[in-house]
Image (cartoon, rainbow, N blue to C red; front, side):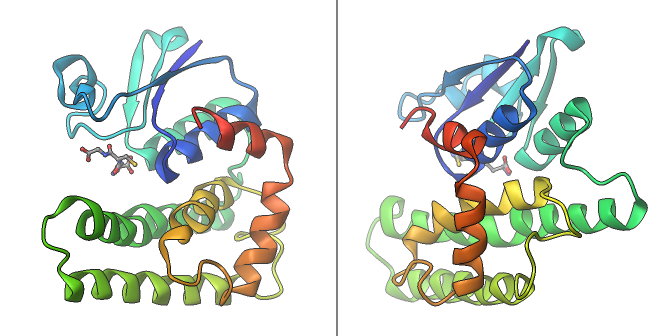
Length: 204
Ligand SMILES: N[C@@H](CCC(=O)N[C@@H](CS)C(=O)NCC(=O)O)C(=O)O
């Protein structure tokens, strides 16, 4: 059994979807960010940077895994699904996971921080992060031209990682997905999957 510590944000939703897709046995726990649970010692044992989501695999000697990218890799390997076996496919999936976690995701954190956390509404900072996020969506939209999935001919953890960023984080862009028809079509296809629907609705 796997304990999942999550919040229903894009990062949490990625892991929630993958757990539903793989059918691995798991128990979800909602982390109370407002109470600072993620900054306390028990949580820091799972992720020393105090970031959600995290998992503990009870069947693997209480193995804790933090950081979304690492969790997606762990669960895809454990479930033996959604990660290509060939070198090229695997490398392409890893490239997408890195781009989404290290490049695109933090742009939306920037938007959130400067619209909702940092006092004073610093408009140039908000404009910068929105502009960079829009540029990233243009690139994602281009990558999805004439493609069903991000990598090869199969639905992988690259798609699972990008989907909540598109549909949840994307709501923070002034025009949502309207300027990105390829992302919108691809997101509709993913959103029709029952496991995705179950993963997305957890704790909402
Ligand atoms: N690098 C981390 C980032 C995760 C992250 O930013 N989590 C947010 C929720 S989506 C969080 O823990 N926020 C609380 C905080 O930063 O204090 C990952 O990829 O898992």
